[in-house]
Image (tube, rainbow, N blue to C red; front, side):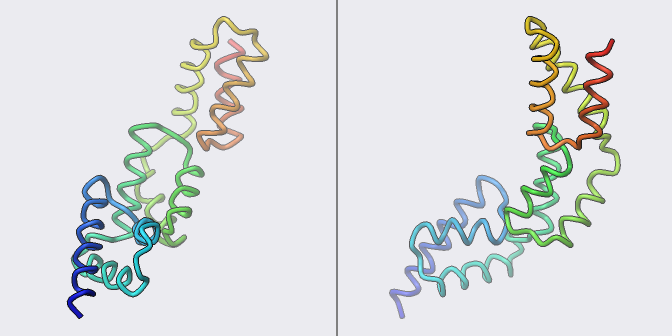
Length: 158
């Protein structure tokens, strides 16, 4: 029994360390603990313990992730949804958090500003190359095709 308590304490300490860097989803934390070859039963106990303390909360994690992605490295809403889904957040939580957090987020305006910066960076390239690279950049950032085409047309057709 003491051996299990030691493993639990050690796993809990590792989980706390991971959570000290940034919030994590339940799936994300579980995956990181599995990488350490920790027994499933101990992982489950640690996850339950942390959920009880509200250190793991997928809704709060999703809010954090959306705020971080919209401010630090602006991108399209579809990319944020994909990232949250990949991190194990339920679709219902994703939908409500995205709706709540992106009320004042104008994806079209953000895409336009990024396209303007890209045009400046690519000013020595020919027009076709600059448009293609800007399109690819915006697509990787998760912007919708309509917003990408609008941004490229506004920036490169002037």
